[in-house]
Length: 165
Image (cartoon, rainbow, N blue to C red; front, side, top):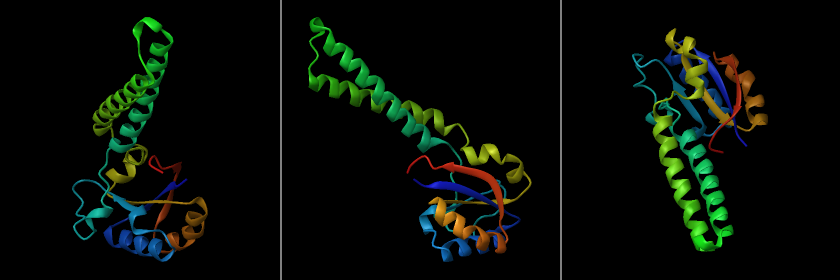
C-alpha cells in the first residue's frame, strides 16, 4: 500500500529541485504531484504533476464500495424472501446497480470537496507555498526524505495511505 507524504517549497524553482530529487531517489513520475494557489503560475510544471484539487476519485471509490455493499445486502435479503422471486443473477444486478449509483453520487459529492492535502495545509497554500505531494512505499519515502529536505523541501505532518492503491 502506498503512503502519501507532503513537502512544502517556497517557489516553483524549489519545487522543481525537490521533484528532481524525488525522481533521483526512485519515486516514479506518476507518483509526484504539485498543489499551489490558483494564482501562482505553474506553467513551467508538466501538466501531469498539477493536482486537480478535489476529492473526486476517493469519493467515487468510497461510493462504489458502499453502494455495492448495500446492493449486495439488498439482493441477499430479497433472495431470502421467496415471494419476491429474486435469483442469484438478481443479486448480482442489485450489487452492480448499487455500486454504479454509489460511485456516481460519491463522485458528484467529492467533486465539490477539496482533497485532504488541500484541507489540511490550506494555510501553506494561501501563503503562496507550493506543495510537492509524493506517493510511495513507506520505506522508499523514508529513504528519499533526507535528499528531499536537502533539495529545499520541508516535510509537513501528513502520512496517510493513498485512496487508490
